[in-house]
Length: 319
Image 1 (cartoon, rainbow, N blue to C red):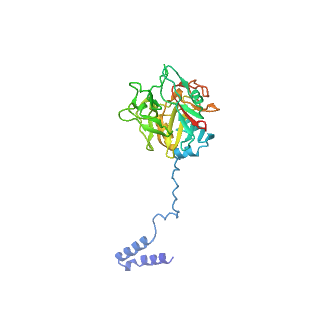
Image 2 (tube, one colour):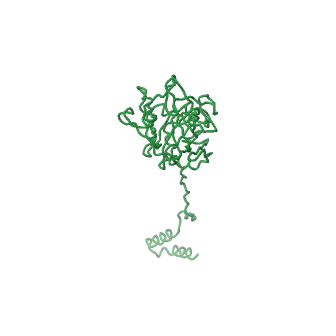
Image 3 (cartoon, helix red, strand yellow):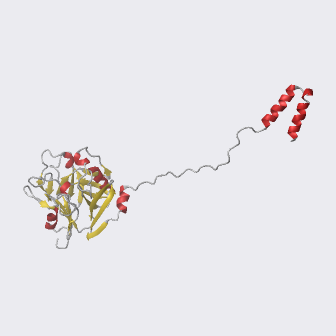
């Protein structure tokens, strides 16, 4: 009330006050009051949500944490199996043989037939008394016998078929007289001049020097199919992998996907073998343990006869 009364008195006495002084006083009173928008109520700062995305486990971590159905077949040989529902966004039926090459009791053999004959993986395994066996390399599907370079105990059994795609014979599995296994690249001048005791060629080369290799843009590489591969780990284990395919239960893999699996399983070198209907995994006393596709059924009865077999034997004193 005091300010209003003072204003009334000033107005009444305005005749005795200079107008400029009166306007200055009114301007002061008007500006002193707060006629603007009142301040907003205080709000605490909004905390930012944690938008960090949990990283998906790597393929190696995924395979390592997989609850494999694992069986010790013999000293130095482990057989593992798992049916994935989310491997490469697909169903995948995968059989793995882990062979400890550091064991003095492990022997690798190559049962085979020549032109005009065929040999099932199971038959080859049984012939040499193997504990486990997988199918080998490419063969003549019409007449039988190996189709690409194969050397056994220092003798060349088969040269490469003329005109055979180079990328499918660019790597070989070697086993020397002492039984030491290795995976080697094809020499620049071809396989014919190589000195080796046992050598089975195939391809493509999947992993070398622990590096996943680029592959040619060929249907053979880019389509999903049953696959068979072998690799050598840094601690000298041989890993044999058989992937089923051509069925809704298992899609099969591309060559690149297969290479990723071999690398994730610890292989520093790895190679593709014959696949498709040939892909077979056999265990002594169990028979065929994967799901070969040659009968168009997801069972153990679709084994295809091939020409070469890779067999792993636990040696005894008699051997």
